[in-house]
Image (cartoon, rainbow, N blue to C red; front, side, top):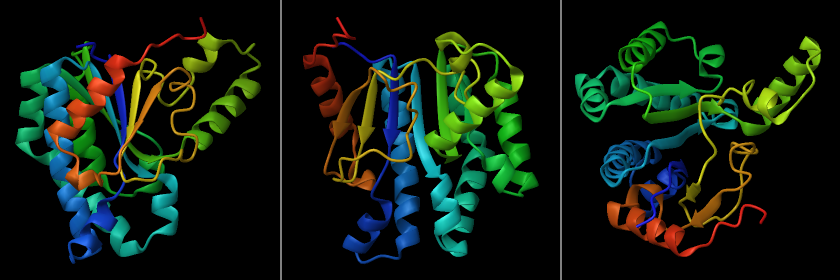
Length: 230
């Protein structure tokens, strides 16, 4: 099987899953966290070197209730602080990072400390990278990048632009997976990195996206021919 080097996932459907199962909306995020681990482990097993999860958008933090925003922050803080998180990364020789505007938006010293500790302890790994996009918006990323380049006076080239992005440490995305049954794009998601990506949309809500569903996405990817403009 032809395995993508970089998979980016838009895990949509946590709240709808909770409503369908007659649970509090917040419970859907807890269930979605379980899928994060399952899919991340499966991707590592099959040989994916880079896997990126869009955990929360900038709009999520500006437009959703304070209770839900606090809940998302609490989940992330608890997960990254777990010894098992570091153990997994060290075992799989995987570098961990969180990208986005979360440091500017979230005033949580415990979260920042936990993330920085995990990033530092896994920084030596270069082949495999696990990335979480948190308080991330692709359009805001591009606007910020362009403004900084204009201010610097540098001539903009593909190389210069890529090296100035918030997501500059990541290679182009080979496969984008969006769950939730609503096949649309959001907030210019990683627009630079997805210029040549293959897209896989599924009706499965994120908490129902199993390893079997991930395998289906990889099989679909393998049967396609990537022409890359040729």
